[in-house]
Picture 1 (cartoon, one colour):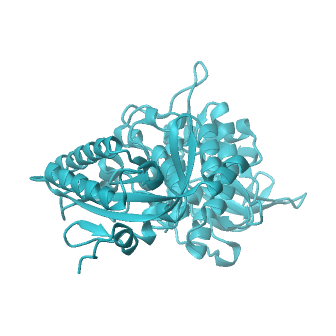
Picture 2 (cartoon, rainbow, N blue to C red):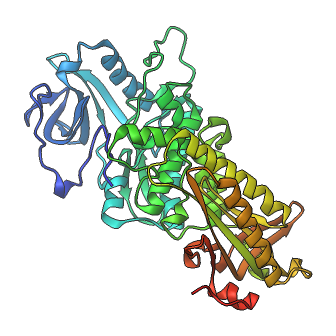
Length: 463
């Protein structure tokens, strides 16, 4: 799960070996001085610079020193960006953002800045070693990241390169201690008068696996750009991989721009409410995402840790329900605009039909829907009647998909679901029925019936 576009790859101390550098990236020898700091070893190296472990030669204070590669010092934009990164980080000053101590120039004219030396490893390395995290544990690691981003946004700074390799895990205790790194391509939302912007029109900066659609398009960048990256990061923490995966970067770009975002629960045990948070972050249009980090954090906390009152309500209202799960599948190789338009059209029609039939939408993703009907609310529609309704809905969806490159797969199930009733209707909060991965089956006919549904409806299972 390496970051394919990572600028710096900071290794745990026991794994650190000086990397080989191309001729244009001359690395400084141990003992070289950056101001009063003596460089000891290379910690990381990337396309723009290198980071060294260092020690103040008088005070003995240990630090990390980031140095711009000498061959880039005559490139005005790179030099300005490097200088501005140090100023931006120093301006924000937040306990969850790496701290910058000093700035200066080497004898060859290369700029450097001194920052705190962080123990531990990056979040990317932790996930590679440990695998996916539970929603509760993912929330614990994201809380301080959110706090850092909120501080940056208040200071008028968009990070726009948020990813697991730019999050340092200082401690994995409970709660964990993390620091946000690398503001090298950060964008100032409101530059000061006379301050130069460092991104020309159409320039695209970021890491392809985590870039928001507007970054690929060269569009307007704002706090919601970081919200998209938060969604990618949360998906990665919950599943162990990125939402869009391909060896071809152009294909990754196309998926970010066009492909419906996958739900984490398709790959890991994730509650529907957490699915909903991730999918909202990954909306293609910025105005449809959470508009600030505080809203994202509140929604995720509510999804992972429902309030005590709601937990009691959900537990006290475990009800028997009938569920219909419908998934729209693309034919092999059908990944063009027309195919995705057909997916959206079929799902929109099916959603309307489900609501008209009295179903509550418990899960709604770019490729699937889960409709739930509480059986106690349908005294005149016993399970066998609901089964017939489900068959009709399936056939209508299939007919709508006829002649396109998509097919519809439906499965029905009867089981217990946690439901909360409020002034706005019924809200499905969890329960065994909401654990789709535990019961969805795919029949050759495209319409599957689980054993539980077959027993409840008194129908034989298809052989």
